[in-house]
Length: 577
Image 1 (cartoon, one colour):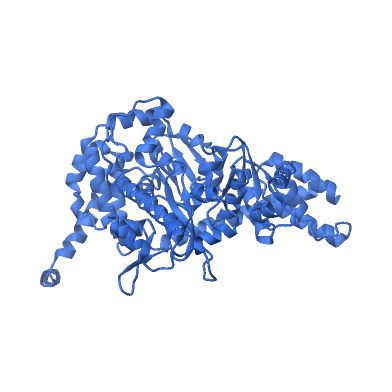
Image 2 (cartoon, helix red, strand yellow):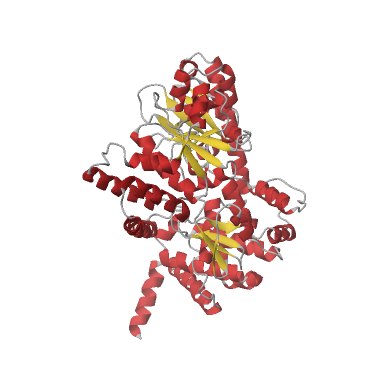
């Protein structure tokens, strides 16, 4: 994407960040700014702030941040050029000519290519290879050839490096294969080996048709049973859903949320194309935000065991926070949708959908399960369970409806029940705030993955960040600032790279925007850059403070450059005074 500063300035002006972010999450006004529950991680207390003056956002919980373009990149999992295109279409602005991508965007493109080649390799290996274990597994699961082809299912051979050799023959570098999490380097001998071995393979496809990762199921008794691609530049399991690329085209405004790959594939094969699943993780607020764009109502179809029921309750709360109504599909005689359809057929499953129950009513009924609520002890236990459940309903109107149902069922006074629920909510809020604070404290002492050198150079790293903050506050002074504090005096590599990129972009651009750095830095790194400014936004950046920070770095460099003899000489001179 051509870095046309005038175009980017117009694009951001036509897409106010509060308007764009507000189309994905509920914003609450707080002075000149807005706050919201972060769409990039699960939380109950809002920790994400949208700054109207700088047209930026920052989450003080997970560190996500940037401007309107980086927000779209993160929420839609798009590359820079694609996010710009989306915003341009949204505002009716024509995009300038494009040129070749570079940096981080180029890495993402190569990972997409590697995943596509690996997916093709797994598929052809299963269909044409001599080892038929993968194909036999899918045949035993009653999948048709059409379904196997539709989902691009495959088999990773029982070999240490067959994929690695194939990918190297296609010209892919070790770095890209490692970044894509297809191959990994052995610490013992330094050789690369395949991540997925002897597994039935499920490609994970995004809404643009790119393979972004894989899920692999073992065909023996080894552990783990399922192995999913780790977080990569193009994949985050907490932000993606399996088969959403098919489900979004379904005419139904209802989506079915199942637990596993095979559940979704079996449902799809039976005619229910509106089925999706999370990728080996519990439902997150980010998932809910994405689901809300494609459905008015969600049908929960989790396993009927205890773990499935607990997952249902967690999911109901998250969906409620996102403003999505949910219903429960109750299956009897089968543990999951895959088994139910095989035993009873698609028509019976469609009947289950038509007779699905309101999610909160279902969970309230579960509170009475195994209890004799006509007895005093049973009634007390039911009320305790109901209080815990009702305290988790975020919408106050919905909560009041189910409070009335509980009063009718138990005979307890509504005022007494509400007082217990209020106490439970306060307790939950304190627990959540303590948990989030502990996470912040833990993060402070945890190794810094983005700037690892900051751990051993805290004073210098803090000084560097203050200089960067001063530069972000006064971009028109970039030439003067970079002359007084040249990038060479920076100690940590990450901050030096950020500072150099900022100085370069600011001195060349009349309308600087952080988005100009999107090709050089990952979304996490872009969030860190935004965080440098956001964390001390209320503190005025003054020239004297900038000069003192520059002196800290210069002093460190001077001390580092002194020889042992020079240091001894300085101490001797001090001693003679």
